Image (tube, rainbow, N blue to C red; front, side):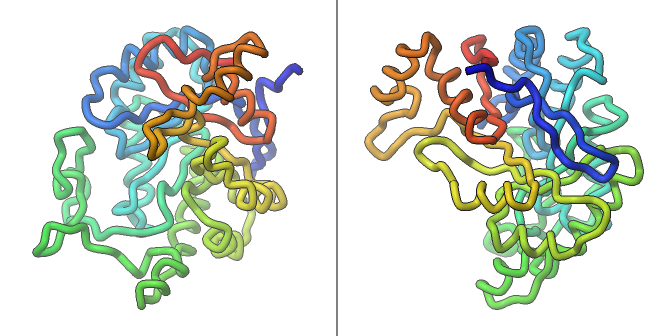
Length: 297
């Protein structure tokens, strides 16, 4: 079965082609791997990079893009803003910081990383994302116990309500919509939103659609109901952790005997099999590897 290399994602200015396999740039701890891994991914044929301000690797990714020789027009680049940038006036500030650090003029897709908001420090312009950055250095206000302070006003209604507060993500979503008209992003979307939270931002309407919802999805967590709702609404689903994690018994999805046998039967490695499974069900897998072991299908 031949799988599509790209699918269409709706946007305010017409459908956009998005590669069906993406390369994720997140990893816990040391980020020194990122430049080499991203450069190898681009040279191996990846054309879709999934990034985020909080990953702290924007400069390394930008350098890898420039050194790869791949034209910017041939790439699809996504980034996301962390919850302390969620106040409407701070969303464009995060975008500008991402573009500056990556050395880019625009993103193809900009997402809200989570459906909640955190209180930023007064001097948010000096915020730094790196493995060694403290919570405050990242620009997040902390309370007397060292915990991040919630910004309930800009948190999704369902989450605020469950915690005894009033909140709405609509103003933040409207700020994202406005950015599409600036030419700095081609499309806007969200990440880790439930059906109820998607309904909240969908109710805003307007010319700029919810183009994407990035969620965790793999055979151990298929998220079928959410993906079916997204398909009904014309929202593309990008899937992080498509290779799964580690189960309570210590087993990994790529080490599952059934997965290994299916991969062998189809003449591919387990990573390729799981990415193929994701594409066949209409999602876009965002695999990552700090080595050369993960190849696009």
